[in-house]
Image (cartoon, rainbow, N blue to C red; front, top):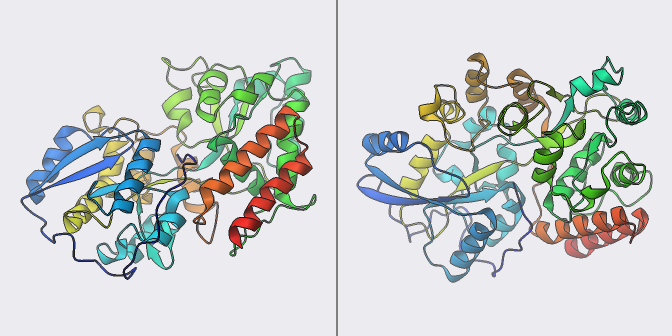
Length: 429
């Protein structure tokens, strides 16, 4: 998931499509450094890769914010940091503009991958693919079916109007005091929650030129912001959520049965959090719901993690071989548990490849697998169809600070929207 740290540095020089000359083309007998904000695959899996390729892997696990700082510092100074590292969906515009990563189409058949990886378009910038998604991450709606049933709700909502009515019924029936989880802390999770809600109301955030599509009261983005703020003011959202971040709300509210629904939840949470007895008191109660929309099921906004090759990589060709292996369908399925615990990669939940998702689902290793597979294939859409703008972090900061202020009452929704739209207009000019 993305934070909102602004990358520093000036535009790099050089042709965007060139492989460059600073790295070696050697693909055997070399050691590459892979730096990601996650634990590595099992050592036995990495050893098997080394045995088959002659490429030794040195894995570095760094927290997300620190990793972005290191990527920026190394690229700005044009010094070596890693051979393969994180490309977050929200940084694609920046990284592409700054020319800090090699185009992946120079090393892998990205056209073939596009049919197998629905979220690959999120990693395209200026005609180049600068990262390969290694997991599938998109926003979903989750509901505690036991609580909905207790409130007398037998048919799950398919529209925003029905969803809102059900939330009010959960509250009026005293099933839960606060039925809805919205993370109103001033952080990235609030921005992405609004993006998902805007999409549900039938809208987009920015046009292809970066101009705001949410500035008028009748626009879906404006209505989404109003709905979110109204929800906390009307007592549908716990008052304490004003300082609750996304993962915190999922772990302490949704997983404990304090709330009955999270409108923009993480894909994979039902199996990895809500159905795990050690972390949840609502085991077997929470399910995915096709996201309620304006007139039926809405889209699911994508926020995947990717991996790419920095321009200063020592062994870019070897790094490409690793990325090809790391993102293969079989390995993705294994990392997510399809072949038993010995091959599981800690913290890895959903394959980015349809074939990997299919294997995981067929083996019964993914709760809600068929729903998630259908969403990945058919309804997972990029937040910004034209690619995240290079100034995304500053825009996101304006979004989450303004929405947080509106939720606290220190700013009206209209003023919050004006501030957000003003930021987008200024940055896109």
